[in-house]
Amino acid sequence: MIEHVLALGGYEHDRSMSGINGGHMLTTGFAHGAVLANAEKVITAIKAGAIKHIFLVGGCDGAHPGRNYYTEFVRRTPMDTLVLTLACGKYRFNDLNLGEIDGLPRILDMGQCNDVYSAIKVALALADAFGCIVNELPLTLILSWYKQKTVCILLTLLSLGIKNMYLGPTFHAFLLETVAKVLVDTYGLQPITAPEQDMDAILNRR
Image (cartoon, rainbow, N blue to C red):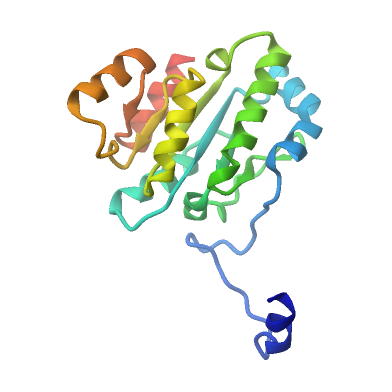
């Protein structure tokens, strides 16, 4: 297939294509291997206060108007925070220029939907380094869902005991009122509201 694509050639002249927010540059390809290779730098930055919080903002994309929430949320993240991202929802915001912290890009791409494993590996490694559980880390998961496989990812995270996750644009259809109440009461699962409101709630909780 690659040979066929090469044979077809590309555009006659180079073209600059922007992302959804007009940006022309994005950095990808981290996954857990690249991040953990810089684990000492991340840990040192957290201990020094250069990194005060980590957000995992990711999941499936879709056409629902409420999905611009994720762009606005990432845009509002403070300069002393990192953003891990994965799945196609990242294309909502991965062309934003978030800058760096001690040479680390503030946005780190963990891969596609099935690469949630990478994000879990990073979280577990950080928890091990700080001698705590994942829920005690300065880490918040902001998830978007669209396809059924993200239900499996959500169930995986719940089975690992991950708490205080934000889910949107709406709760899954299978979450009947009684089921949703159990997940909210037991795991702190909550629907997204407005970017500024959720950001304040997360940062004031830490």
